[in-house]
Amino acid sequence: MIEVQGLKKGFRSGRGRSARQVQAVDGVHFRADDGCITGLLGPNGAGKTTSLRMVAGLLVPDEGRVLVDGIDVAVDPQRALARMGVLSDARGLYPRLTARENIVYYGRLQGVSRAAALQRVEVLAEVLDMVPLLDRRTDGFSQGERMKTALARALVHDPANIILDEPTNGLDVLATRALREALRRLRDDEGKCIVFSTHIMQEVQRLCDRVVVVSAGRTVADGSVDELLQRSGQADFEDAFVHLAFGPEALAP
Ligand SMILES: Nc1ncnc2c1ncn2[C@@H]1O[C@H](COP(=O)(O)OP(=O)(O)OP(=O)(O)O)[C@@H](O)[C@H]1O
Image (cartoon, rainbow, N blue to C red; front, top):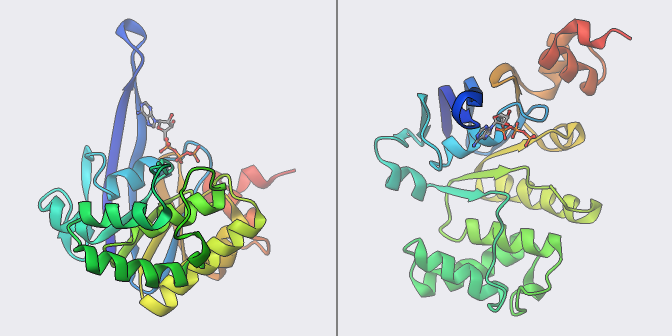
């Protein structure tokens, strides 16, 4: 389970006199439960990536805190991070290594024994439907094949919590469907807590048990798709999102 409380993060942008403060995150909070897929939905620049980078311990918040299975990331980062698998947009794989070697190598870096990592590869290859890829060098892999390998790598230490930043970026429709199916299996078969960011409505509607709407750095709404439709009084989820993220006036023709 991941709990995010009152996160804030600002950046200084530019130099000298033209430098100014950008408030990337200005009050993001949510709770993501085990066995649930939670989507962070927001427009470009809403602060989703910055929030997830703080959750993953890659950025230190100015304010607020992140609890991973009750462990404060700022207080005990090692224990908190060991409970998370993170798939960011940097999906760097070693091109000369096979998919299996990439995954096992990362497992070793995470402190997993070679035998356990090799065993985990077999399980993940089934869940992610990538058995035929395992013994190919990743050099020349398609975007979808890279994504699956990177996801398996992020999950090799069997973390209870999975964080994905815009995971379907650059994937075609079949690879996107395969990823969705993999995330559902990780939720249903393994009871994982899954948090991902996106600005794609259909993705949220098809996949999420819970949606956190982020706008201008803040959590502005939180609930299931049906709850958000009800709360906004809209029949269409895109309209509901625009209403919640930008206010009812943004829906005017
Ligand atoms: N390192 C940085 N320095 C300066 N500004 C930053 C930095 N990182 C993010 N920002 C700014 O913070 C705001 C939030 O950015 P962030 O990448 O978190 O948004 P996002 O919701 O993930 O957007 P997108 O959907 O476009 O990826 C943006 O205005 C961005 O320009």
